Image (tube, rainbow, N blue to C red; front, side):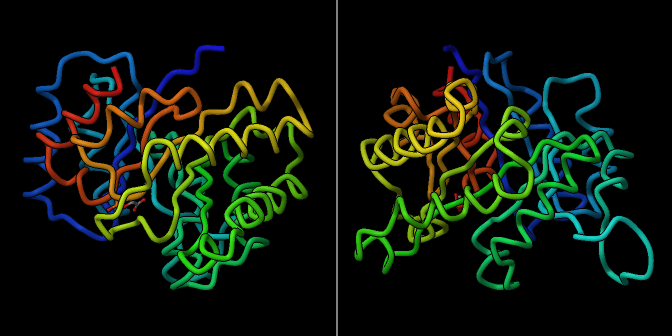
Length: 249
Ligand code: PEP
């Protein structure tokens, strides 16, 4: 099955009106691509980015949603609000959310459910720490994180979400997994999903994330089970990000 590649930039808590305008204007110079190009700004800049990318093929993502639908939850942002800004994707289960904000598997699963109910496409991030990899628990961890979501939304819902395999040891460390290491885990995740649904396992796009750079991306994208990349640091540099998009084809 041919799966469209996705190259998504997670800007994390970076940027200003000025830098974002420069970054998006740089990205708009990109030639057309067969891949889907996605950017995930912080909440205050969604409106600005929505206007800047309007009429282009660049797609908007958000970095988080509240577990609640609406009401007295000071400082939170709901899934329904994101729809107002043309947001298509939402990152959920990012390792920074899991480790710094105690988002356990159950919380991630309930956010996935809510996102789907509000028509957003979750980018479900999974991945092991260095200690877990060294203890040969990579697949156990990824499968547990995915199973927690299957338990809440069912396997059929995976037709409407994207998985991002992001080994924690590779995020923001400059230490990317090799293309072969990524392929091995992506293939195993697909095999795990196939135990519940063969068609879902073939359809679901699995992105790799963790210190992706232009120089390492072409080897990654040649792997049969790598359907794109979730890019942090390198997505803040228009030239570098465009080079990654080009490598995706
Ligand atoms: C990320 O934040 O999802 C990420 C992969 O970051 P980086 O590319 O900087 O490792």
